[in-house]
Structures are given as C-alpha cells and as structure tokens.
Amino acid sequence: MNLLVTGGAGFIGSTYTRMLLNGDTDTPDVSRVTVLDKLTYAGRLDNLDLTDPRLRFVHGDICDPGTVAEAMAGTDQVVHFAAESHVDRSIESADAFVRTNVTGTQTLLDQALRHGVERFVHVSTDEVYGSVETGARSETDPLDPNSPYAASKAGSDLLALSFHRTHGLDVRITRCSNNYGPRQHPEKVVPLFVTRLLTGRQVPLYGDGRNVRDWLHVEDHCRGVEAVRLKGRPGEIYNIGGGTELTNRELTGRLLTACGRDWSAVRHVTDRKGHDLRYAIRDDKLRAECGYEPRHDFEAGLALTVDWYRRHPSWWDRAVPTES
Image 1 (cartoon, rainbow, N blue to C red):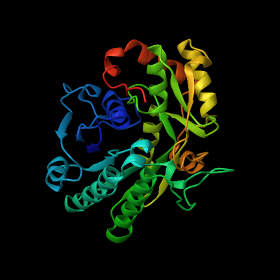
Image 2 (image 1 turned 30 degrees about the horizontal axis):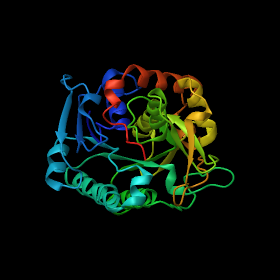
Image 3 (image 1 turned 120 degrees about the vertical axis):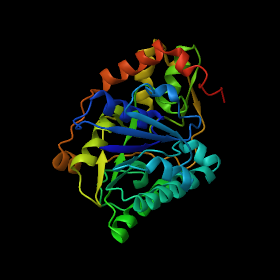
C-alpha cells in the first residue's frame, strides 16, 4: 500500500505518519508513505524520520497541480491533513484559508481522479457545525460555521463529497474535536499556555473563559482517521471525539497546576470575534462502524504533553509567539 499524506510534516499529519511507520496502528504493512508539505511555519522536517526508506518527502504546495501530480504518482490512497487551521489568523485575513483549504483540496481531488486513486480521506473539524448550545452534533446535522477558517473547511467538505457523488471517487470525511499532544505549534492554546507558563510568563484567557471544547489526544485522532480509512464507507462522514468537555477556564486551571503556576499568571483579554461558545459532537457512528475507542485518559495525556514540552525547549522556543 502506497499512501500520500498531505500536511504530513505538521502536528497531526506527522503524528499519523510516525504511527503508520512505527506500527502504532492496526494497519497492515505500509510499503511507502509520501508526505507532501509546504513547510509553512507549522510544518517541520524534524517531526519526521527522513532516514526511513519507506518515507518519501515532497516539498510543495497542494494548490500547485504539477507538484501534486508528482507527489501522487503511484499513490493508492490519499489522507488529506494539509490545512490552514488557526482561527485567529483566519479572522485577520481569510485569503490563505480559502486558497489552501478550498482550492488546495480541489487540486488534490482533481489529481486523485487523474491518477486513479482508490480512496481519499479528507480530514476536517467539528467547527463546521458552529456553536452548539445543548446536546451534540451528529454527522447529518447542518453546517453552520462562524469563522472564516470553519467556513473554508465546510466548503472543502462539500467539495470533497461532490467528487464522490459526481465522479464516484471513494471519499471519506472525518471531523475531529480539539486536538492536543506533543509537537503542536505554540499558536494553539495548550502549547501556547504551557510554553508561556514554563518560561515564567502570563497567559491570555479570552473573555470569561466559559467557552467549552471537547479535548482529543492527537494519537486517538489519528487512530480514528485510520479506522475510517480502513473500515469506513465511501461518501460517509465520521465524527471523532475525545469525550472530555472543559471550559477554557477549567483547562487553564489544569495547565496552571501542571506547570506549577497559580492564577496570577493569567490575564483576561478581550474575547475574539465570533468566538463559538461550545463545540460538541457525537462519535457513536465511528465507534459502531469502525470499532473506534479513544485510548488516552485526558489527565494522563495532558500531563505527558506538558512533560514533553518541558523536556524539549529547543523544539519550541524559536516558535513561541511574541507577547501581544
């Protein structure tokens, strides 16, 4: 089996690639994994073992048909992680999000048809459902994105499904909740708070901190994606949840304790525009059809994540955002 993994040098994509090559999934032997990555600020080659003979790296943009064609040559299946994903950046400027998330996905889908790819797994987000006041969203609920990032992902989801319905391409979509784990860029809340707290700085808490997110360890997310690739159905959508809902204030309290700091290290900042109050998804479809079960207990997973950043300052110190 030859796989193309887009965005495979980023946080989630590199975790998926390492797990495949290290035998940390239920996947049969993989002959080759080709990683296509533009190596923007969030993608790093040191996330990958480039000495593994089964790993091929292609540096390039998913919006470039020639680069995509080169990377896709000889590929059996595609797992598409590549995306612009930071909500705050999408609020400042949506251009890169529309280009990468929509046009890039369309370029990949076009080339998948031309190369006779047998399966295309499109990795998306629970943010496409919008804010959820009560209950939890299932895969058949309407899309109601609020941020430019979420809207661009919703658009790419619909585009991917259209290639299944129009062309018969085996497209499978996953929508995950908030990821955490080692090697996440410090623009995201967990590594942002951890790296600031470990270096004696304050952390910014939006508004009153009552926004709720469901937390999913990155390795459990990758196992869910792989379960969909192996056992999912063409044209179907599968939510991947972690089962741990916390307010941002509750998450902050846990991170303060883990880093040995107190609430004096927290400063409240103006809430961001269009800040969704709560995300919540049901993943019973994935559990029933694909046998998915998250393996990471949140408290233990968070402790190990904090410990990883504590032990690897050289990985993140040059990437920590400046104070705002």
